[in-house]
Length: 479
Image 1: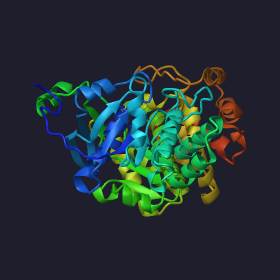
Image 2: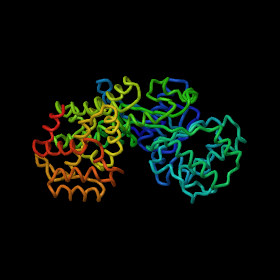
Image 3: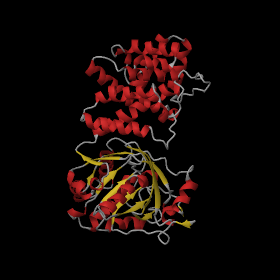
Image 4: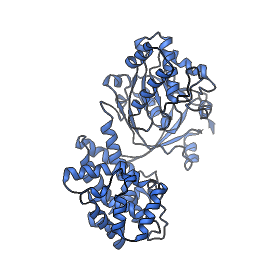
């Protein structure tokens, strides 16, 4: 079997236009795949320089393969099973700024560089006042980026056309706003000139983005079969689902420079990321949170099997289409298409997504993902959404612990104070006390949910039904 490098496999070359902070699975399966497609299908003609954002990383492994690797996309696309392999070749080189600081800082001097893209984990966009301008490099990602921007400002003497377009992909809401705020903090901390601050404000763009693609990562289970198929020893193969979405809060002229839509990709340039964030949290995370306890307590372990189940599948559709979708304000056809994509993702035949893995911290998840929809539905319809309320009752029941009907252990996992509270409440055996206690837990909800009209009575009714007849019968009762 051949080693994978530019001597054994073809590699295209293009001007370095993008600095990418992060070399992990997600960026390689999402952003670099998008750039590869733009190179293949449009006149973008750009390559990526990867920068390792922390001291320990995998740039040596990347460079060892001349930054070549394969992407294995798996899933359903409009009902068709996809299991493709693509060799990605758009990364030109990879740098470690801790050992190659001069090469890293020299990126600022390259006139063709136009974009900065990052995924440095949710903790990566943070201001560290210990960082200094003369550090080689600054420890934080925003610190490194500010060093790079200031060097570019100096090199090109504040030329207006040498500003950079910055797309953070970290999984925090309004990531661009947070990153921009950090850069201004470093400008202040380091006493950088007002002319640089003006150049950054007027000539650079830091744009909030929302990214969506499930990336399981290295295919440990399938690695031998994949290597036989590609005929290379590739140690950087990455698996991902076929679905992808990148929402970028930026003006349309930025889309002209980054023509992903012309490559047929789901990359949207929009005035506000907020409604798309709400759509994802509501129609993807929201159903996940309630289907998991309902499915598990019905004897189902895998998300795909829950979607295909004759009863639980209808419950998921009820929550998705009849309840949560009614709380959003985007065009209905757009919401229906997104919801259909979500269900198709849930049914991915290549991913055995355990419902128990979604059950971690279920109460805080319900508070952020489902409670807002419950309130909006009540306000708009004048009644409570039965599917969401049953989902809350299922979470409360799951936290009782014990065993499922088939003998499987029920092992809730949450903050210790929540676990202790539920244990104490279930010890009473009184579903009214349990309902009062959970809904009244202001430490979870930030408010007393007993004040929501009708909620207490409906939760108690559902708890009683689950105790008496089992989860599956409780679901049938609301369908």
